Image (cartoon, rainbow over all chains, first blue to last red; front, top):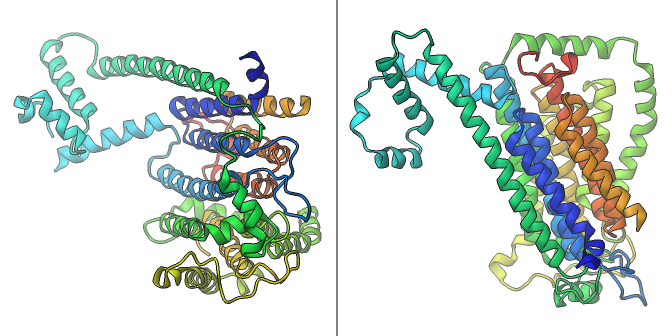
Length: 127
Length: 310
Length: 86
């Protein structure tokens, strides 16, 4: 088991990074930091996937004649898809943050919720 | 929505179902009940209702923080224990290295004509996957345009003032370092992006990375010189034509096998000799399509984020 | 072996630094460093396609979008993430 701790450190780093990103999403009040945490979670999952495709003493899958020792190309392709989807999601969420700031004048999630509730109560009493 | 409302006779389950269905926020119901209770009991005391509610909210926030830390630590602990028990990192006998990847590596060159196995995988064997990803990027730029386009409902004077200030800074004779450096770097960046796209099937890279590099180059030029010169090339017309045209080309070159059946690995386009630039069948045109879509989308993000228009 | 572990340790330190930093500008800057080191880790793991994409997208485009958002909400001037200061 101690031997595996010294060999599986890529996976363990990925899991620790996932935990840090998860804590960021749960506990940060600031919306921008929440989204940075989400990006860290993304990259942690990619690190986990790619570290499983890695085979030691083999090269990247650019195929040359006479050499059949390559790492697994499947996780690379999947992660390439994931990176581009993550950037489009980041752009969309940042656009939402800008609109939210324009409407409520704050980046704090709690303040937004508070203002939303008081606004609801006002609208309800008016109607 | 008055505080002594008539929905007091509802049972807790009915409230819960309403909350599950999204018709009513549980917190607001709870807060209302609390307010009415406090109003009934403590009208004579000095403490105001808002203070009490703030106190209770702070307490529940503490409970939330406590439980979120406990849950995350437990979860990460379980995952770490699992990671220790997983098969060894980098061992070639691991179950992830099965016949799928073996087939991609061994038959990839014969099937597709592309030397780069990752490119062959994402643009030939799993081309629908990549098409969906490109469409996701397209959907994202549409959402950003809906949210940030400058119109009557989305206009604030502060932003307008700042935009005019930015224009003034751009048109001034200052920031010579930025202008000189970007004039030096911009052609190299674009050339490198085109190289990465065109060599996607024989070396690392491909449509996504090359498109992102070209988009970054366009952003650099736009940041240094403004969008006046760029507007002749990249405007709304050309943007929509390029993006929609490339997506349609991609769809028709890969989507015909919906109607004809088969795995559409075999096509009428010759494979060429592996290693040459004109090889790989459809991979080179598809790489160019994806690169154009990604470059336009990334410049579109920048343009909508700064100016609110393209 | 040693270099790999140093890079992974750097990743964890960067992630913690994003969490504890008080200013948003500092947090985004640390995130750029994180992405760049992540691109090097992809090279170590023999995935050069990912390294190019991560260097262009993670360190380039994403951080530009974050910076523009910060500029838009005037965080560049105030340099503080307290909501009433923005």
